[in-house]
Length: 217
Image (tube, rainbow, N blue to C red; front, side):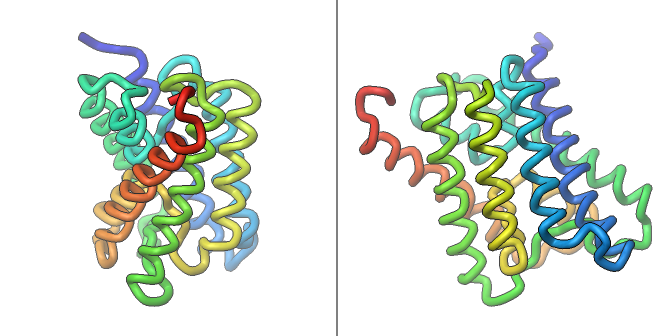
């Protein structure tokens, strides 16, 4: 049976990847007119806006690592895990395919590639995601990211982490956000980092949340 929350995750992840990686592409196409801080703020603003818009519908996970963490710690139904994954990945893929049509000469399409060693980026993505998901767990309502507090807090963390870590690891914190441009552009080098580190970081955040708020979890 069709569920509107799956559509919410599909549309939300499409918008996230289209605007976020689109900002990276436009910055490259215009020789830096958006700037790195502008790209970071774009990611933060789009996440904030999507939580406002979709929080009541799908929870605005927009990230397989977040959905997996919610599921693992029994805040989200297991039967909806795979449909959410599929919705998020398909939305991200459509966004990257759309950007390819708009900017066919762009080689990377906003793909996340380590600037330094693979382990440096792995460590960064692990820690960044742990921080992000810990914030999400502390401001979310049950399985849903929604409300003014959640939107501002989560969007702010995304912008902050993208601001200082983006030049090194890309500050993805999101397997779907990295998978789509990698597959569509064909630049899959280092992709394993962005599929594994965010998931591990999200799970560690869940355990930390349990230690900090045993009655709340």
